[in-house]
Amino acid sequence: MITRSFGRAARAGAVAAAALAASGIAHGQVMYKCVDEAGRVLYTDTLKPGCKALDLPSTGATGPIAAPARRGATPAPARSTAAPAATPAEFPRVSTYQQKARDDDRREILNDELRSEDKKLAELRREFNNGEPERQGNEKNYAKYLDRVAQLRDSIGRAEKNVDALKREIANIR
Image (cartoon, rainbow, N blue to C red; front, side, top):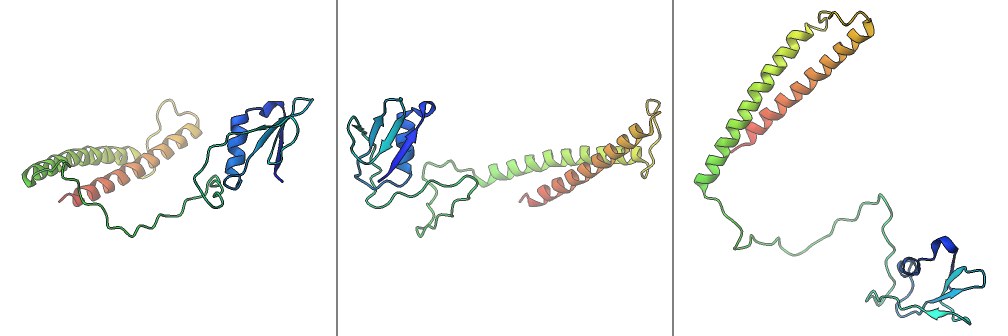
């Protein structure tokens, strides 16, 4: 016998019925909703006086219903034995000439970005001065100076990563 009792705060019958349906109730089993004198709602699979049968949606399953996935759990990858679908006939095609023009445009844009990133990196390295940048007038507090040095170091690291990523991207263009 399955029984679930819910207080006044959880009177949403549809929500509770859906929760019971997802909890593994067998196909074709009838569920009843009962309300006692205190107003408490009780869901059960046993017919009692004053209970109403619920019209639960059928899952179409003939066996047990699978439990809902846990939060944070990664689903198992689907295994397909069918061959991958071919490209649809109406799928837009690009000629070799158009693709070459697009690749050339992309290469030029990436080269422009690489030049500007190289320029930015050179400026940051010049300002960093091998880890001993000049103190500015507003840095009478040594902690402010150290914060600026740390920010410069981080900025140089980011700029170097950007330059590397741009070079990789340019190398990947056909």
